[in-house]
Image (cartoon, rainbow, N blue to C red; front, side):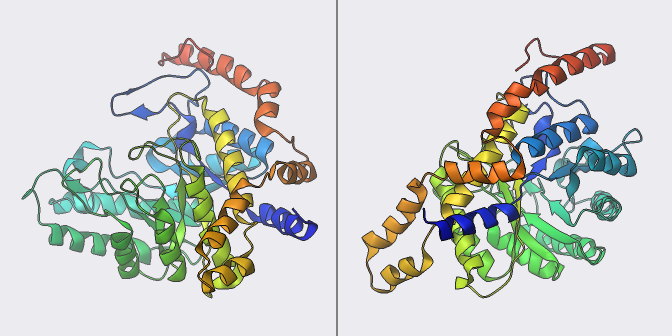
Length: 400
């Protein structure tokens, strides 16, 4: 790697930040159950402590996304949560409403056949917008479980209309610096039809909602073998890409740590973004990078650090693509040589450059090893096991 490419890579790493999910630090699992971990966060203040630890050891995770119903309460009002985050050295990131867990939402939230339930869901979205203003968050991140399980269960076009109305009302309540991100998912928990099933539907709803609405891409929310980087390229070209929920999968929405199954796919996604930002496409787009994973087996804070390190590595590798050389091969139809430009960048060892960047930030070259040597997980596991015992909560017998 020549000095000019390294300089550019280091500058890009200065700008690359990843938002962590509060829910990724708590005990989470699958629909079949969960395996409890002694080090798992008990409340939002534990989550803030863990997120701050990840940022401290990686230097690239200054924000923590919050889930409204899971993170705020009378004991944890917005002002106290914001102050705790500030004291720990991080910020509150995207606001995630919850219109899927309450019993009223069995038949949907903003697309529910009952107008009273639809109103309840919309009011929660509006309260979440207000919470974003109070916490200084710039984004409202929306995922809906709405859909149906059986043919004939509901009128699909009517539900589409309900969504358009709700999202427009939510959009119109946004502050001047806030954005609305609309996520999609082809199936689960609805198995006949999902109201926002793909990027095209999310794009449509964003366009109908207003000019502050964008699409959020979760890398696990696609059918097997779907070309996610093509979706990214289209959304970039239309200035409609709000951000990502990064994870990995083997089958469906597995929520595995980033790069666990197919790091080359993430590299290709970053390649599209780097090409866009290098000026190959002329529009502007502010992209947010977020983690959304379920660490049912891996130690949660370690898994976050592992994902942040992998994201930095793949982002750095993709920045090494020589766009001028690639374009020359593309225009002359030299397919093998064009592909090799990608492959050579992917094979490049960026470990020395990442170590140099981390040294400049005053952090260890290997954040995961440094975290383990710090004793943070053991200390928090002991403290949280004692608190769980006092509170009468489920607890693990293992420090993992």
